[in-house]
Length: 402
Ligand code: FAD
Image (cartoon, rainbow, N blue to C red; front, side, top):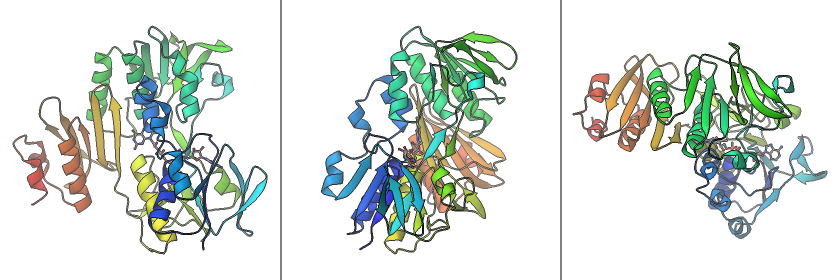
C-alpha cells in the first residue's frame, strides 16, 4: 500500500486527497498544512467573506468529519520544513514522516513591499489567507480611507467590497490601465466605469513611490509626487509560486515547480499541482492561479498516482465578482490580436478574444450563456467568425452544432 503525503492543505491538496480515496486508494493519506484552518476556499476572502456575508465555516471545502470518515489525516498548524528525497521523508515539527509518493500543493505567496518604502507599517495588508483577512476586516468601516495598490482582480474585488461598505476607495495602478496583464482594454474599460460609478477613484499609469506613516499608515506617495491620505493600504500586486521547499530539495523549477504532463516533478516520487506548479502547454510551459486549475490538476495527479497514465489537459476558466457584476472567463487570451464584442440581453456583454480566425478566450459579464458557449467552443476547438459572434441575432447555442 502506498503512503501519500500532501504538502499544503488548500484547494489542490484537499481535492487530491478526496480524489485518491474516490479512486479507491487504500494506503495512508496525510495532508500537512501550515495554516491552522482546515482546507478552505480563498475566492470569498476578497468577496462575500470580506463583506461579512459568510461565516468562517462556510469557507471550508469539506467538513472536518469528512477527513475522519475518509481516513485522511490532517496535520495542521506546522509547515513541512524539508524533504529528504533519498530517505523519502518530510520533516514536520522536527519529526520525519515517510512517503511513498509526495505531492506539493504549496500554493503561492503574495508579493509584499520592502520596509524601506513603508511595506511593513501597521495597516498594510495583503489578501491571501483567512488570517490576513481577519486581521484587516475591522478596518472596513464606513468613511475609512483605503488605498489599494494594484488594479488586478484581487485589488478590484477588494475595492468593490470597500465601496459597498461605504469606505473612501482609491486604486492605484502602475500600468497604463487596470487589468492590463490579464485582459483586453474593453474589459478594463468596463470595470473602470463600473468602479467609478460606485465612487471608487482609479488612478492608472502611476506607480507607488512609498507608503507614508510612522508606525501606522497615514497615506501613500505616488511616483509623480502626489500624496494621498489613507487609513490603511491593501497590496494586490501579484503572487509568486511557493517553491522554496522544492528548490531546497533540488527539484527542477521553471516559473514554479516544473512538472511533466502527468504532474510528476523531476523526482519520480514527487508530484505538484495548483498555483505552485508549471506544466507543459502548447510547446511551452504554463502556470495557472485559479480554483479550476487547482482542482483539475490535483485530480489528474491523483489519477496518475493510481496509475492512470493520463496527461493533464488544462481547460482554463476563472471568475470574479464585483458589485452586481459576475465576470466569467473561459480560455486563455495570451497572443490575441482582435476582440469581438457581443451585447447580450440587458446588462450582459462579452468580449471574445481571437488570434487570426481562432477563438482563444471569452470574458463574459453577467452573461452565463456567452461564457458556457465560449468555453465549449474553445474546448471543442471551434471558432465561429467574429461577425457571427458580434451579431446579437446569432443564437449562441446553435454555434456549438455547426
Ligand atoms: P492554496 O489554496 O493557496 O493552498 C496552499 C496551501 O499550502 C496554503 O494553505 C499554504 O499555507 C500551504 N503551504 C505552503 N507551504 C507549505 C509547507 N511548506 N508546509 C505546509 N503547508 C504549506 N481563483 C479563481 O478561480 N476565482 C476567483 O475568484 C479567485 N479569487 C481569489 C481571491 C483571493 C483573495 C485569493 C487569495 C485567491 C483567489 N483565487 C481565485 C485563486 C485561488 O484561490 C487559488 O488559485 C487556489 O487557492 C490555488 O489552490 P492551491 O491549492 O494551489 O493553493
